[in-house]
Amino acid sequence: MSAPDFWSNQEAAQETVGKLKALTAMVRPMAELGRALDDVHVMVEMAGEDPSFAAEAASELARAEKSLADLEMKALLSGPHDAKNAIVSINARDGGTDANDWAEMLLRMYIQWAKDHGYEIELLDRLDNEEGGIKNASIAVRGAMAYGYLKGENGIHRLVRISPYNAEGKRQTSFSAVDVSPEISDAVQVELKDDDIEEQVYRSSGPGGQHVNKTSSAVRLIHKPSGVVVACQSERSQHKNRAMALKMLRSRLVRLEEEKREAEQAAKYEGQARVGFGAQIRSYFQHPDQRIKDARTGHTENNFQRVMDGQIQGFLDAYLQWHARKG
Picture 1: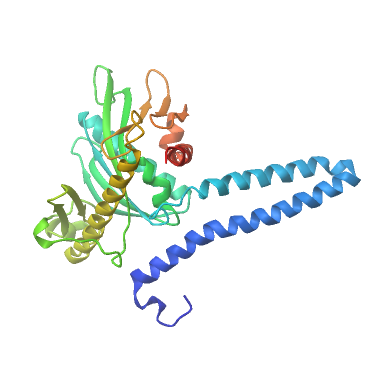
Picture 2: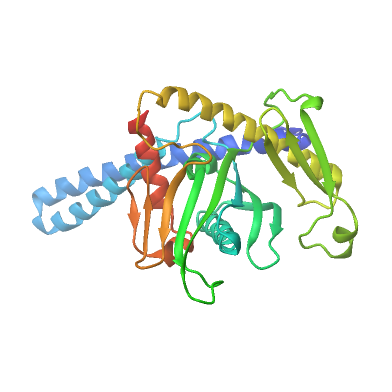
Protein backbone atom coordinates (compact mmCIF):
# COMPACT_ATOMS: atom_id res chain seq x y z
CA MET A 1 0.00 0.00 0.00
CA SER A 2 2.99 2.32 0.40
CA ALA A 3 4.02 1.77 -3.23
CA PRO A 4 3.87 5.03 -5.26
CA ASP A 5 1.54 3.53 -7.88
CA PHE A 6 -0.73 1.70 -5.43
CA TRP A 7 -3.74 3.97 -6.11
CA SER A 8 -3.23 4.14 -9.87
CA ASN A 9 -5.82 1.37 -10.23
CA GLN A 10 -8.60 2.40 -7.85
CA GLU A 11 -10.57 -0.86 -8.01
CA ALA A 12 -7.52 -3.09 -7.48
CA ALA A 13 -6.42 -0.85 -4.62
CA GLN A 14 -9.84 -1.03 -2.96
CA GLU A 15 -9.76 -4.83 -3.32
CA THR A 16 -6.41 -4.94 -1.49
CA VAL A 17 -7.65 -2.57 1.22
CA GLY A 18 -10.71 -4.80 1.65
CA LYS A 19 -8.49 -7.89 2.08
CA LEU A 20 -6.40 -6.04 4.65
CA LYS A 21 -9.49 -5.03 6.62
CA ALA A 22 -10.81 -8.61 6.56
CA LEU A 23 -7.50 -10.01 7.81
CA THR A 24 -7.18 -7.31 10.45
CA ALA A 25 -10.70 -8.11 11.65
CA MET A 26 -9.45 -11.63 12.45
CA VAL A 27 -5.86 -11.02 13.57
CA ARG A 28 -6.43 -8.06 15.91
CA PRO A 29 -9.07 -9.83 18.07
CA MET A 30 -6.76 -12.88 18.29
CA ALA A 31 -3.92 -10.70 19.59
CA GLU A 32 -6.25 -8.95 22.03
CA LEU A 33 -7.53 -12.31 23.28
CA GLY A 34 -3.95 -13.47 23.88
CA ARG A 35 -3.28 -10.38 25.99
CA ALA A 36 -6.56 -10.84 27.85
CA LEU A 37 -5.66 -14.43 28.74
CA ASP A 38 -2.26 -13.28 30.02
CA ASP A 39 -4.09 -10.78 32.25
CA VAL A 40 -6.37 -13.55 33.52
CA HIS A 41 -3.37 -15.70 34.51
CA VAL A 42 -1.83 -12.78 36.39
CA MET A 43 -5.12 -12.02 38.19
CA VAL A 44 -5.56 -15.68 39.17
CA GLU A 45 -2.05 -15.78 40.63
CA MET A 46 -2.74 -12.56 42.56
CA ALA A 47 -6.05 -13.96 43.80
CA GLY A 48 -4.18 -17.01 45.11
CA GLU A 49 -2.12 -14.71 47.31
CA ASP A 50 -4.88 -12.20 48.10
CA PRO A 51 -8.54 -13.37 47.90
CA SER A 52 -9.69 -9.78 47.37
CA PHE A 53 -8.54 -10.10 43.74
CA ALA A 54 -10.87 -13.07 43.08
CA ALA A 55 -13.80 -10.93 41.87
CA GLU A 56 -11.55 -9.00 39.46
CA ALA A 57 -10.09 -12.27 38.14
CA ALA A 58 -13.60 -13.59 37.47
CA SER A 59 -14.50 -10.37 35.65
CA GLU A 60 -11.38 -10.59 33.45
CA LEU A 61 -12.18 -14.22 32.65
CA ALA A 62 -15.75 -13.33 31.64
CA ARG A 63 -14.44 -10.66 29.25
CA ALA A 64 -11.97 -13.14 27.74
CA GLU A 65 -14.71 -15.73 27.26
CA LYS A 66 -16.85 -13.17 25.41
CA SER A 67 -13.90 -12.27 23.16
CA LEU A 68 -13.37 -15.95 22.41
CA ALA A 69 -17.05 -16.42 21.52
CA ASP A 70 -16.89 -13.41 19.15
CA LEU A 71 -13.73 -14.80 17.54
CA GLU A 72 -15.30 -18.24 17.09
CA MET A 73 -18.23 -16.56 15.32
CA LYS A 74 -15.89 -14.73 12.95
CA ALA A 75 -14.13 -18.02 12.22
CA LEU A 76 -17.39 -19.22 10.64
CA LEU A 77 -16.93 -16.57 7.93
CA SER A 78 -14.70 -18.81 5.84
CA GLY A 79 -16.60 -19.01 2.55
CA PRO A 80 -14.83 -18.10 -0.71
CA HIS A 81 -16.59 -14.72 -0.92
CA ASP A 82 -17.37 -14.02 2.75
CA ALA A 83 -14.79 -11.24 3.05
CA LYS A 84 -16.25 -9.30 0.12
CA ASN A 85 -18.67 -6.40 0.02
CA ALA A 86 -22.35 -7.24 -0.42
CA ILE A 87 -25.00 -6.15 -2.90
CA VAL A 88 -28.44 -6.36 -1.30
CA SER A 89 -31.53 -6.23 -3.53
CA ILE A 90 -35.08 -6.05 -2.18
CA ASN A 91 -38.20 -6.66 -4.27
CA ALA A 92 -41.81 -6.31 -3.14
CA ARG A 93 -43.83 -9.45 -3.82
CA ASP A 94 -47.42 -10.44 -2.92
CA GLY A 95 -49.45 -8.08 -0.76
CA GLY A 96 -50.11 -4.96 -2.82
CA THR A 97 -49.14 -1.65 -1.25
CA ASP A 98 -48.42 -3.42 2.04
CA ALA A 99 -45.71 -5.41 0.26
CA ASN A 100 -44.23 -2.19 -1.12
CA ASP A 101 -44.23 -0.68 2.36
CA TRP A 102 -42.71 -3.88 3.75
CA ALA A 103 -39.91 -3.77 1.15
CA GLU A 104 -39.04 -0.22 2.24
CA MET A 105 -39.05 -1.29 5.90
CA LEU A 106 -36.56 -4.05 5.07
CA LEU A 107 -34.39 -1.61 3.13
CA ARG A 108 -34.27 0.70 6.15
CA MET A 109 -33.52 -2.27 8.44
CA TYR A 110 -30.45 -3.34 6.45
CA ILE A 111 -29.20 0.23 6.06
CA GLN A 112 -29.49 0.78 9.82
CA TRP A 113 -27.67 -2.49 10.58
CA ALA A 114 -24.87 -1.50 8.19
CA LYS A 115 -24.53 1.96 9.75
CA ASP A 116 -24.47 0.53 13.27
CA HIS A 117 -21.59 -1.79 12.27
CA GLY A 118 -19.49 0.81 10.50
CA TYR A 119 -20.16 -0.24 6.91
CA GLU A 120 -20.33 2.13 3.96
CA ILE A 121 -23.60 2.16 2.02
CA GLU A 122 -24.32 3.15 -1.57
CA LEU A 123 -27.82 3.27 -3.03
CA LEU A 124 -27.56 1.68 -6.47
CA ASP A 125 -31.17 1.59 -7.57
CA ARG A 126 -34.58 2.45 -6.17
CA LEU A 127 -38.03 2.37 -7.74
CA ASP A 128 -40.75 3.96 -5.60
CA ASN A 129 -44.36 2.82 -5.57
CA GLU A 130 -46.94 5.54 -6.27
CA GLU A 131 -49.09 4.78 -3.21
CA GLY A 132 -46.27 4.17 -0.77
CA GLY A 133 -43.12 2.12 -0.21
CA ILE A 134 -40.88 0.80 -2.96
CA LYS A 135 -41.20 -1.70 -5.77
CA ASN A 136 -37.52 -2.60 -5.54
CA ALA A 137 -34.16 -1.25 -4.43
CA SER A 138 -30.50 -2.27 -4.41
CA ILE A 139 -27.71 -1.13 -2.11
CA ALA A 140 -24.02 -1.91 -1.84
CA VAL A 141 -22.80 -2.61 1.71
CA ARG A 142 -19.03 -2.22 1.80
CA GLY A 143 -16.72 -3.31 4.60
CA ALA A 144 -15.02 -6.35 6.11
CA MET A 145 -17.12 -9.54 5.91
CA ALA A 146 -20.25 -7.73 4.68
CA TYR A 147 -21.27 -10.60 2.38
CA GLY A 148 -20.33 -13.22 4.96
CA TYR A 149 -22.72 -11.75 7.49
CA LEU A 150 -25.56 -10.91 5.10
CA LYS A 151 -25.56 -13.92 2.77
CA GLY A 152 -28.08 -15.78 4.92
CA GLU A 153 -30.71 -13.09 4.27
CA ASN A 154 -31.46 -14.53 0.80
CA GLY A 155 -35.10 -15.49 0.44
CA ILE A 156 -38.66 -14.44 1.14
CA HIS A 157 -39.41 -12.36 4.25
CA ARG A 158 -43.05 -12.47 5.43
CA LEU A 159 -44.82 -9.75 7.42
CA VAL A 160 -48.11 -10.20 9.31
CA ARG A 161 -49.69 -7.03 10.74
CA ILE A 162 -52.79 -4.83 10.87
CA SER A 163 -52.54 -3.03 7.55
CA PRO A 164 -52.26 0.80 7.71
CA TYR A 165 -53.56 0.77 4.14
CA ASN A 166 -56.76 -1.10 5.01
CA ALA A 167 -59.62 1.14 6.17
CA GLU A 168 -61.28 -1.81 7.93
CA GLY A 169 -58.18 -2.49 10.01
CA LYS A 170 -57.84 -6.09 8.84
CA ARG A 171 -54.79 -8.24 9.29
CA GLN A 172 -52.61 -8.37 6.17
CA THR A 173 -49.86 -10.77 5.13
CA SER A 174 -47.27 -9.42 2.72
CA PHE A 175 -44.06 -10.71 1.22
CA SER A 176 -40.78 -9.23 0.01
CA ALA A 177 -37.79 -10.99 -1.52
CA VAL A 178 -34.21 -10.28 -0.49
CA ASP A 179 -31.23 -11.24 -2.63
CA VAL A 180 -27.64 -10.86 -1.41
CA SER A 181 -24.63 -11.26 -3.70
CA PRO A 182 -20.89 -10.68 -3.19
CA GLU A 183 -19.60 -7.60 -4.98
CA ILE A 184 -17.21 -9.06 -7.53
CA SER A 185 -14.32 -6.97 -8.88
CA ASP A 186 -13.50 -6.73 -12.57
CA ALA A 187 -10.44 -8.90 -11.90
CA VAL A 188 -12.70 -11.92 -11.33
CA GLN A 189 -13.45 -13.61 -14.64
CA VAL A 190 -17.14 -14.29 -15.24
CA GLU A 191 -18.16 -15.31 -18.76
CA LEU A 192 -20.70 -12.86 -20.16
CA LYS A 193 -21.68 -13.04 -23.82
CA ASP A 194 -23.09 -9.92 -25.45
CA ASP A 195 -25.85 -11.97 -27.12
CA ASP A 196 -27.00 -13.18 -23.68
CA ILE A 197 -27.57 -9.66 -22.31
CA GLU A 198 -30.50 -7.39 -23.11
CA GLU A 199 -29.86 -3.77 -22.19
CA GLN A 200 -32.57 -1.21 -21.45
CA VAL A 201 -32.09 2.47 -20.63
CA TYR A 202 -34.66 4.63 -18.87
CA ARG A 203 -35.00 7.85 -16.96
CA SER A 204 -33.84 7.81 -13.37
CA SER A 205 -36.62 8.23 -10.82
CA GLY A 206 -34.46 9.01 -7.81
CA PRO A 207 -33.12 12.34 -6.53
CA GLY A 208 -30.97 14.47 -8.78
CA GLY A 209 -33.11 17.28 -10.13
CA GLN A 210 -33.86 18.13 -13.72
CA HIS A 211 -30.77 16.47 -15.17
CA VAL A 212 -31.75 13.06 -13.81
CA ASN A 213 -35.37 13.40 -14.86
CA LYS A 214 -34.68 14.48 -18.45
CA THR A 215 -31.97 12.02 -19.48
CA SER A 216 -32.12 8.26 -19.90
CA SER A 217 -29.11 7.59 -17.69
CA ALA A 218 -30.43 4.56 -15.76
CA VAL A 219 -29.48 1.12 -17.08
CA ARG A 220 -31.23 -2.23 -16.70
CA LEU A 221 -29.55 -5.48 -17.80
CA ILE A 222 -31.38 -8.76 -18.37
CA HIS A 223 -29.31 -11.95 -18.50
CA LYS A 224 -31.37 -14.17 -20.77
CA PRO A 225 -29.96 -17.63 -19.83
CA SER A 226 -30.50 -17.16 -16.07
CA GLY A 227 -33.32 -14.61 -16.05
CA VAL A 228 -31.34 -12.39 -13.67
CA VAL A 229 -32.30 -8.70 -13.90
CA VAL A 230 -30.17 -5.91 -12.45
CA ALA A 231 -30.48 -2.13 -12.63
CA CYS A 232 -28.46 0.90 -11.60
CA GLN A 233 -29.35 4.59 -11.56
CA SER A 234 -27.04 5.92 -8.84
CA GLU A 235 -24.81 7.82 -11.28
CA ARG A 236 -25.69 10.65 -13.66
CA SER A 237 -23.57 8.99 -16.35
CA GLN A 238 -25.15 6.19 -18.35
CA HIS A 239 -21.65 4.76 -18.86
CA LYS A 240 -21.01 4.56 -15.09
CA ASN A 241 -24.45 3.06 -14.46
CA ARG A 242 -23.80 0.41 -17.12
CA ALA A 243 -20.43 -0.46 -15.54
CA MET A 244 -22.03 -0.82 -12.12
CA ALA A 245 -24.91 -2.87 -13.54
CA LEU A 246 -22.40 -5.24 -15.16
CA LYS A 247 -20.65 -5.62 -11.81
CA MET A 248 -24.00 -6.37 -10.16
CA LEU A 249 -24.76 -8.95 -12.86
CA ARG A 250 -21.39 -10.68 -12.41
CA SER A 251 -21.96 -10.72 -8.67
CA ARG A 252 -25.40 -12.29 -9.00
CA LEU A 253 -24.10 -14.99 -11.35
CA VAL A 254 -21.21 -15.82 -9.00
CA ARG A 255 -23.68 -16.10 -6.13
CA LEU A 256 -26.00 -18.35 -8.18
CA GLU A 257 -23.08 -20.70 -8.89
CA GLU A 258 -22.20 -20.76 -5.20
CA GLU A 259 -25.82 -21.48 -4.34
CA LYS A 260 -25.96 -24.29 -6.89
CA ARG A 261 -22.94 -25.96 -5.28
CA GLU A 262 -24.48 -25.58 -1.83
CA ALA A 263 -27.76 -27.07 -3.05
CA GLU A 264 -25.92 -30.11 -4.38
CA GLN A 265 -24.10 -30.56 -1.07
CA ALA A 266 -27.32 -30.08 0.92
CA ALA A 267 -29.36 -32.53 -1.18
CA LYS A 268 -28.73 -35.25 1.36
CA TYR A 269 -30.37 -33.16 4.09
CA GLU A 270 -33.91 -33.93 2.96
CA GLY A 271 -36.62 -31.91 4.67
CA GLN A 272 -34.46 -28.97 5.75
CA ALA A 273 -35.54 -25.46 4.79
CA ARG A 274 -34.18 -24.16 1.51
CA VAL A 275 -31.75 -21.29 1.65
CA GLY A 276 -31.99 -20.09 -1.94
CA PHE A 277 -33.72 -17.09 -3.40
CA GLY A 278 -37.48 -17.69 -3.30
CA ALA A 279 -37.54 -19.61 0.01
CA GLN A 280 -39.58 -18.22 2.92
CA ILE A 281 -36.88 -17.89 5.51
CA ARG A 282 -38.32 -15.61 8.18
CA SER A 283 -41.68 -14.42 9.47
CA TYR A 284 -42.23 -11.07 11.19
CA PHE A 285 -45.40 -10.84 13.29
CA GLN A 286 -46.70 -7.51 14.55
CA HIS A 287 -50.19 -8.86 15.28
CA PRO A 288 -51.60 -10.42 17.42
CA ASP A 289 -48.21 -10.47 19.20
CA GLN A 290 -44.75 -9.20 18.38
CA ARG A 291 -42.52 -12.03 17.24
CA ILE A 292 -39.89 -12.58 14.56
CA LYS A 293 -38.88 -16.18 13.89
CA ASP A 294 -36.37 -17.64 11.45
CA ALA A 295 -37.72 -20.80 9.81
CA ARG A 296 -34.26 -22.34 9.39
CA THR A 297 -32.48 -21.65 12.67
CA GLY A 298 -35.45 -21.26 15.01
CA HIS A 299 -33.93 -18.03 16.33
CA THR A 300 -36.68 -15.76 17.69
CA GLU A 301 -36.86 -12.11 18.75
CA ASN A 302 -39.86 -10.56 20.51
CA ASN A 303 -39.23 -6.85 19.96
CA PHE A 304 -40.50 -5.97 16.48
CA GLN A 305 -39.34 -2.34 16.45
CA ARG A 306 -35.87 -3.23 17.69
CA VAL A 307 -35.40 -5.58 14.75
CA MET A 308 -36.76 -3.00 12.30
CA ASP A 309 -34.18 -0.57 13.73
CA GLY A 310 -31.41 -2.86 12.48
CA GLN A 311 -30.84 -5.12 15.49
CA ILE A 312 -30.58 -8.30 13.38
CA GLN A 313 -27.15 -9.56 14.46
CA GLY A 314 -28.75 -12.38 16.43
CA PHE A 315 -30.35 -13.71 13.23
CA LEU A 316 -27.10 -13.34 11.28
CA ASP A 317 -25.05 -15.18 13.91
CA ALA A 318 -27.67 -17.92 14.27
CA TYR A 319 -27.59 -18.50 10.51
CA LEU A 320 -23.79 -18.84 10.48
CA GLN A 321 -23.93 -21.42 13.28
CA TRP A 322 -26.80 -23.30 11.59
CA HIS A 323 -25.02 -23.31 8.24
CA ALA A 324 -21.80 -24.61 9.80
CA ARG A 325 -23.66 -27.50 11.47
CA LYS A 326 -25.56 -28.28 8.28
CA GLY A 327 -22.44 -28.26 6.13
